Image 1: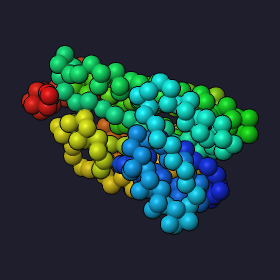
Image 2: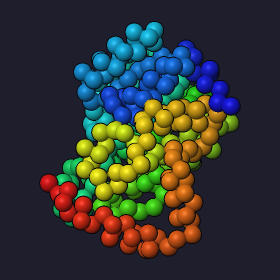
Image 3: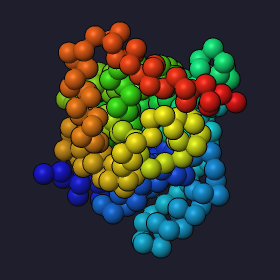
Length: 267
């Protein structure tokens, strides 16, 4: 049984907290008594969520920061640990995607995925995890994706960044478990969020899962120290089947199925 009572009174930093899974994670942690630091680009949305959670008795702080900026992780660190707030729970949720023909896609959007999904995630972990190791207590949740289990044409960069996230999480688990730090990779499938509007990946929008359900699964898995949690049944089936199917067959099928939508999605 997940021991979520351990989160009571602990400070949790949630990235990408202005909407989607991040906002749902914040609500879930608040329900278990955690104190929250919410960070994202849009301060107005953070303020609305902070007011909602504060009205329920949760202590909340906000830090507006854009993780596309290489200096943002350090700014977040200075506003938390630098201000005397011990962060025991790190929810590395912020991420973005780009669906479309790679040869025609905006290069800045491709690079932004790497900066946010990989570089910022590693930077934040490197800043906060040493304090958890020193205290011999802490929790890190890294939001990967079911896209991390196979290459996905027209979501090339996004899927590759999520492989990075999942493998990083699994390796970090082994390094820090002896210090009482738990690390979990959450792999959602299609989920209610702004991802679809931003990435234009409607070719993969099916069997949408509620964000709060995904958040609950992730937080429960983190509490019990589960290394990887796949949030839906189709994702678990896919993760199992790709062990036996040739990569070339998978990518051929996905490319054929998504090609029409990919060319339509071009700006």
